[in-house]
Image 1: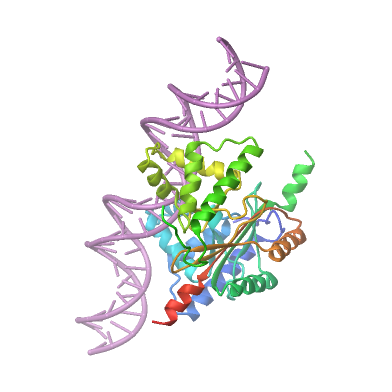
Image 2: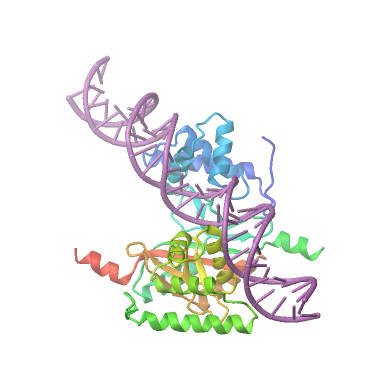
Amino acid sequence: MSEEHHPHTGHNHNDCIESALETAEQLCAEQGQRLTKVRRRALELIWESHRPLGAYQLLAKLAEEGFNSAPPTVYRALDFLLAAGLIHKVESMNAFLGCVHADKAHKGYFLICDECHNVMEFDYQDIHASLIARAAEQDFELRSETIELTGLCSACKKAGASL
Amino acid sequence: MSEEHHPHTGHNHNDCIESALETAEQLCAEQGQRLTKVRRRALELIWESHRPLGAYQLLAKLAEEGFNSAPPTVYRALDFLLAAGLIHKVESMNAFLGCVHADKAHKGYFLICDECHNVMEFDYQDIHASLIARAAEQDFELRSETIELTGLCSACKKAGASL
DNA sequence: TTCAACCTGTTATACTATAACAAAATAAAA
DNA sequence: TTTTATTTTGTTATAGTATAACAGGTTGAA
């Protein structure tokens, strides 16, 4: 596979994928979870995509490689990866994204570009704290947070301005 | 219709519905938008439900009342109401909820109970400001926010504790 | 009244996700 | 090592969510 540079951050995405997979192996080993072939490959394919990947897109890729091509195959793999905290689901897109902080418990907050559909994950303690405080005022016990912000990313803003 | 009291806030929900409908009429009139029969009734049915209502649940209710019962009917009404800011979509539930502040532009932030599936809308300027600031740091121009928090509401927490 | 814009009817289909049960693989116990 | 229990995968079917495309009707303005 050739080196790829992520359009927005300019990092080497291959390194990302590798390190994500290593982390996943470790994490599963520690917790006695099995990162089977299909689960591992699903995670890798999700990471190889710069954008969130839909379940059926993933299914098609897996099918090309000889994996079973019925929906339950991919949804099971996704359920496993979600439960293990290795990926996130972007609810507003019905799509899945590699989690950049799989090694520590965290919530996924996303910036989603309307133009290029790239997604940046960010993690912010101050926002998290505000949300918890807000919920507590209503006597609400917070369990999970879906924070998905859409708009224009830096690159697309520049591209739009130059038209 | 009999008086109903909202399970969580104890308010008279009928008053809510009435005032929501009035606001909707006004808003549409001001903006030269047509609140047609099916749109009006859809909005009313969404308000009559204490919980977010799925598109096909809404479709069934409309069909019972003699409206056309094909999916585009309900999705068109929903699209209109969403665009007018009269309802919100709860992405993590694929369901729709009356907007409590239709008269002023705002983002919908939700507390969703895992047990009873009731949803509370809240509106918080400090969180909004934090999110904008966070996005700006990434040179990201914010357009819309999806904030959906799940957990246990006050009532269900008490019910659970007494088991 | 004629036109243009908008709204609705209708059929078909695409996309997203899960139920239910059978078969195979793996891990642990005997 | 054989048996047993548990987990994972295969397979078929179906449920649930959403839109495309085009025809027909309504509304309001020119």
